[in-house]
Length: 216
Image 1 (cartoon, rainbow, N blue to C red):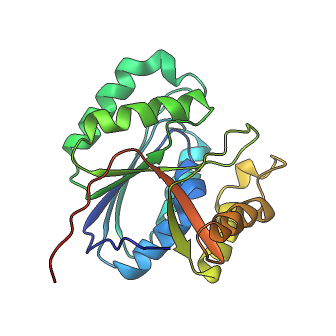
Image 2: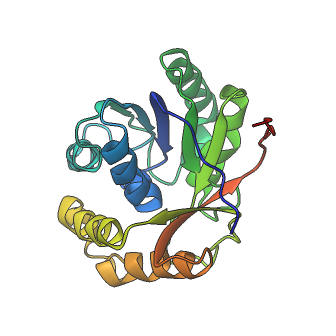
């Protein structure tokens, strides 16, 4: 495959509808970025879970997934599964979040996600982050909405395994779900690895991007 190489990063934004979305969708990428960009600023926004034990899980998990990074995450209290009914608030919160950060890369759910909360925030992100590369991550779950990704981030096998272990460790409230286990997460990353000639990978949807050819 022909790679596109990203330059030096100073700041990224990570956005999720629920606590654990970000770690499921791009936990391996976070671990890799923290490893290679030790002074990286990570600015995060999560719509639901604020004021509950899930917020505690999320903050501890993201600290673990971003070791050494300058991390600042806000967890809101929008009711789970009701995001469309809170469109105005979410739009305003996202605009406020945009005004407090200046990332080179923005990560969020992908627009084709079957969950209404994921889909809504995916639709709103590009309305606020108009000059950044926006990468839509995938969230494995019960719905058969697995996308056909166009952009892959190869992961070192150890990173993929660490992600799967950390998800199980840091989100004990979710281990009751029959799909929330290391086999699920490693299975998906192995599949994405096959699709980009690597052992493991995380996949993203890119809706719009530009590239420039420079003379050597």
